[in-house]
Length: 296
Ligand code: ADP
Ligand code: MG
Image (cartoon, rainbow, N blue to C red; front, side, top):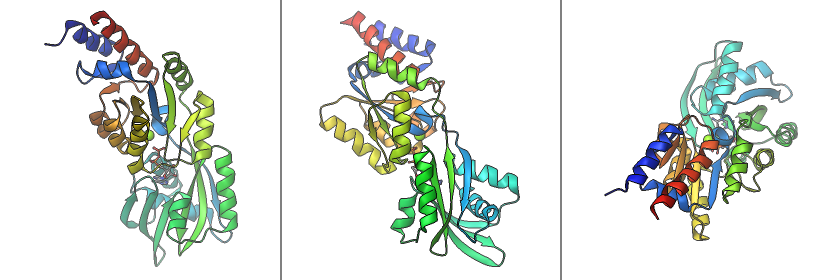
C-alpha cells in the first residue's frame, strides 16, 4: 500500500503546478544531485526571432529568405517557424517538395525558383561541411559574428554552395536565473545541454549561472550525456521540452517535462512542470524531500 504521505505529496504537487506520474516518483526526486537542463524552450523561451539576413554577394536577400522559408515550412522546429513566418509575410513562398527533416541539424527540400528545381539545404554549418558544400569566407564570417553575438546561424545552400546566413535567437526566460539559484541552494549541480553551438550555449549559461555546458550534441547523443553522468555515480534529473529530449528524459533517474513542451517529452517524463516555469523544478525537489521526511 502507498503511504498516505506520498499521496498527500502528489496532491500538494498538483497545487504547485507539478504533475507527478506516481507516488513512487517522489523517491527518485529526493535523491537527485545533478540536474541537466535543455537550453531551447527550457531555459530560454523557445520562441525564436529572425534577426538578420546575410546574402552572399550576387544573391538577392529577399530571394534567400523566400527559398529558406519554403524549406523551413516543412519543419515544426522553433527556428523553422521563425524563418517561415517572416518569409510568408514578405510574400507567397515558392513551391517546395521532398522535405526531409534532419533532426538536430536542419531541413532539406526541393524548391522551384522560376523554371529551376533547386535542391536546398538549410541548417547548421556542420551539416553543410559534412555534405562537402563550399562555405565562402563571407558566409563563414557572418556565421562567426552571429555566434559571437549569442545568435544561432542558419546557413542556406544550393548548387553546392552556401548562399547566405540567417541569424535567429531567443531570450532567456526571466525566471530561469532564479530557478538555477534555487536548485543550487538545494545542493544540485546544474548542467546545460543543447544541440546549439557552444558560444550561444555558454552565453546562456553565464546569464543564468550554470558552469557546466555540453553543446553541439545531436538529439541521439543526449541520452549518452545522461548515461555518462550516471556512470560517474551521479543521480541525474533531466528537464526538457522537445521530442528530441524524450529519450534523455526516460534515461534520467528523474525526467521533468515542461508543460509547454511536446507530448513526447511529457509522456517520457516522471514529472510535468505545468506552466513551463523552471522554478517549479526546485519546488518539486523540496516537496519530495519534505514528503519523504515525514515517512522516514
Ligand atoms: P536544442 O538542443 O537547442 O533543442 P536542436 O537539437 O533541435 O536544438 O537543434 C540543434 C541545432 O541544429 C540548432 O541550434 C540549429 O543550428 C540546427 N537546426 C535544427 N533544426 C533546424 C531547422 N529546422 N532549421 C535550421 N537549423 C536547424
Ligand atoms: Mg528544447
